[in-house]
Length: 222
Image (tube, rainbow, N blue to C red):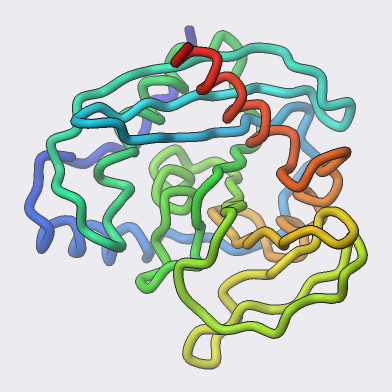
């Protein structure tokens, strides 16, 4: 196990307090190119079933994308379902699963939003800031924003806008498949986030880190 030692806050808060925490954390957001290329990357997938949040992590080598380690964690959910505040339901499980890794990740890739969020504080940004680690959001669907569809070939992408601000990219990871929604989490910029997702997208629509995390989560459930 490794100690992530995050700059924590209370998770047992009201929705109003949660929004205030998001506002405070957002001041620490860093959008900048990564300072070095990662040697590994952790894909993170979270699901809520009943009153339990289940997080699965697949740690892959980079750029070879070989599975190095996998962990899971379950945490009882106490925070209500409130759109835009899902990090308060899912975050504790993610931190618990990360603590079970024996290798520290160089980068985190979430099947979730980063700054492509109404308050620019999706799960990838929230956890990235708490851990002060490079993080990327790569979601299967849009939470907010407007865009023009990218071309059909792999590698094409278009900006995702919200109120005139570029908050992410709509990225085609395979020819003629539905795009994914990529956004900055923390300590990366959009160009690096898109490049990382594309370099991790091999045979499937989803990049290997989050695809493997989803596979581990399903295997764990069975």
